[in-house]
Amino acid sequence: MNYTIITSLCKGPKFPAKECCGAFKDFACPYADDLNDLSNDCATTMFSYINLYGKYPPGLFANQCQEGKEGLECPATSPTSASDVNAATTTAASSRLWLAASAAFLVFVKLL
Image (cartoon, rainbow, N blue to C red; front, side):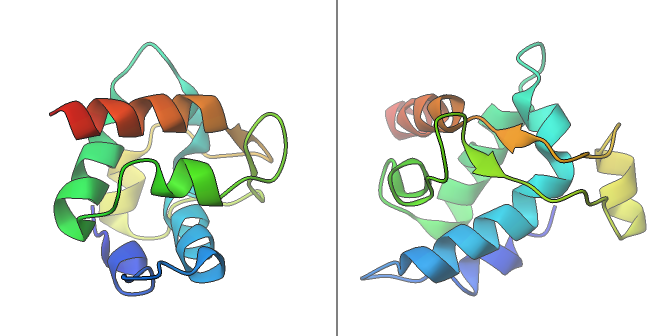
């Protein structure tokens, strides 16, 4: 996966919420169904790589990117490149990213 959409827009030391959250949603929303599926390790893997490539503070996205009780609102989208299509088994259809799961995975990443 190409994490440049996040790492090119979400930069420290201030990590502006508008840029960081927008970039996170652009990257993650096409895979919301897979990321919310607790039977796989998709979300854990994604946050591990985001932390590896971006060196973000723990909880950055969970603390800054809040739109409601159930997480982030994702518009109906689908992956666009051939590699993205292979990486996703389903497309997102107006689903939410679980904020609580995101926070838990970021804490897990920090412990690695």
